[in-house]
Length: 524
Image (cartoon, rainbow, N blue to C red; front, top):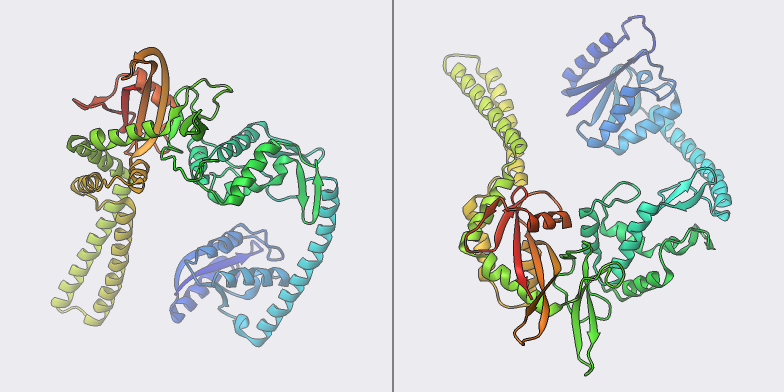
């Protein structure tokens, strides 16, 4: 069993109860009882009448890691002299699976100790409830005046500490409006999370957006001005961030349970949603629909800012999706490109830090093997067999632990992969094309990181003889390079800067630390 020792003294006079004496007695007890001491926590010249002791608090915090199950103390007053503190921290340790043992006073296991602990826990509960009752009265009074009452401030707001009321945080409020617009226009919660996190957006707690946090945001009526605390609700008690019409559209979509499909297009799947971005402003292009003169419904991808700040023309859904799918199937997943992609993936897995850790564990295993061999030779030449065999058993257990750590680390780093295995997998994916929507969705999700679509002013003739504008498309694939979604800046550089490498006879370019960018200059 693993144990730690807590030692403390409150005077500079060195007596038997001093740090050195306490440690000696505790180590003697640990050896007799079969404990393995893994750490010492020492507070020097610290009183036990309060809990403001650095090493003490560190020990309590470390107990949550469950690396030890026992705290050894010379006497219980080394742990705490305040009975309330003793009960509270004994309870915290107990919740973490840790017990306290006084090596000179087995108080913790005695009937008296159990009785005192139960009594003080009851007093602590009464104290907490009485305090909570008074706090709640004050919080309700503040709530009636629409003041902040503690807790996490919703993203988009901050608290004016002079008035204790909520005010708008302009930078975060812009993110909230964008989130509501994206969801109202068809993007799924997962896709919005990916979009927000790739752009470096963070919540008020400085955390990435998750499905749970985003779902809470989309349902929060504070954003349309409704202050709420407990059973208190005040219309107009909060500054408004989101337009009421947009908020209602979002609630309507949530109530339908439509998590991924655009409004008015419940039976249509837009395969590029979350992957397609406007090449002019960088905003997502979302699925929309329109009805022709004959009643025919047409589906498009439109820039989210179309008609507002961006003049990017809409793109026909079927034509654009077919172009992307054909390009992946016919030009991207070729034997030559698969070989290049597999090489890049293997390069991205060649992590020096992981490699050093793995080599370190492998060295430890070799050292253990060497020591075991030396012990076996000692037995062979007449050494005392039992002590040596006991040591061999200890080393065998140590080696098993090291081998388990090595296996886990190799799996986490995927160091078992070879380039042949990656190439085989990619060829297998390419060969399973059955023409289904499910396959196309999987193909795009697996290989495409981001797509940017540009309009140019250059007119071209289409097959019918009509004039149209040439478009330029940039496709970034999920291979290696910086984490996150490729940005508009990356795609701009791709179009204006010479690539690092160029695959002959294809449109495949390799730029930006190994990330693969496909540049196609003739999408009509």
